[in-house]
Image 1 (cartoon, rainbow, N blue to C red):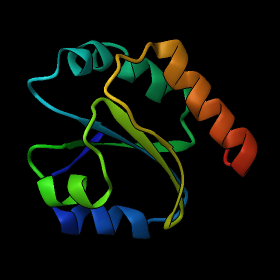
Image 2: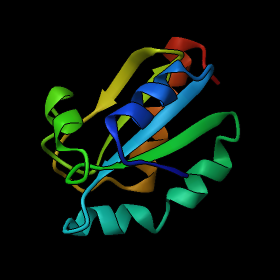
Image 3: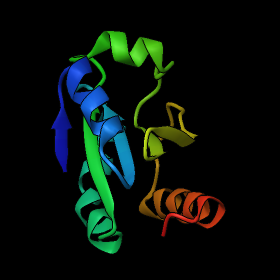
Length: 111
């Protein structure tokens, strides 16, 4: 999973072709540490999707612009377009993250 640590790197990611999943987290977030434990399994399951992570505290202007106040949260992008968001402050299980990605790919034809 690639780390996005500047607004420019986020914009560069958007310009890349294909499907991308962006995971927003914070170092202080216990639920994010829980999510970190299984994200490698999610990446392995979706080899056709590029995965990125953004520390919401490192790039606060991006988080504010995208209204990401609760973490962990996920965005799905197809090309430059944001096609789905899973934003809230609740813990997410691996099953919930997989269901979010599966549903997004089913609707957007990105699998």
